[in-house]
Length: 209
Image (cartoon, rainbow, N blue to C red; front, side, top):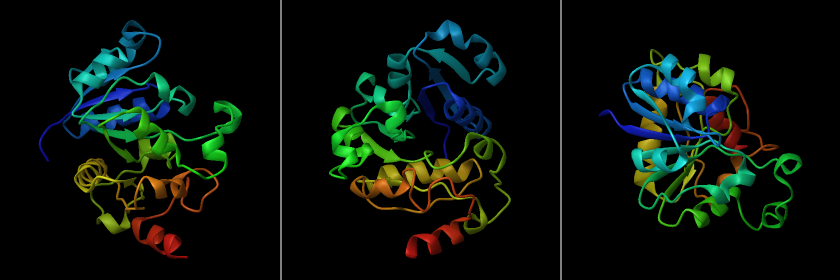
């Protein structure tokens, strides 16, 4: 896969770990947080010349693909991403995010709310089911994809899902397609695939059951 420009909004555990993995795979990263680029100076120095600190708006403009790794309650602050692939790594935790009636009732999945906010973005749910320490350590490009740790994906845009699946495979993981954004709730906390240290092959069996 060609080198890509990847924006990251959220420089916490998942955002910073993914940044390192994407850079190691040959991509360029612009990473941002809510506190300003100057607070990311040490992280960017550690990540090396293919990383830059940015504001969320700059990261959104920079990336062909943009990873969203902020608390779900802040999704309404996300900058516009029209036409871009947006990887939604956010989870709904009512104790942190406050109760959202549409999510509590099951009327909508959280990624549907995100897609509604980001008009025209090609939203793919991914990177929300794996602990950052596992993300950091468990990727292994030497293994066949079916034998790698799984990172499930969901989305309504087949081409965007393929692009995200390739990124996941480039950093040493494998994926299974969980369906549409409406079905992405099956990747959320309290569901069988969430935070499970299983291979792609094992995940297929879990989902079948």
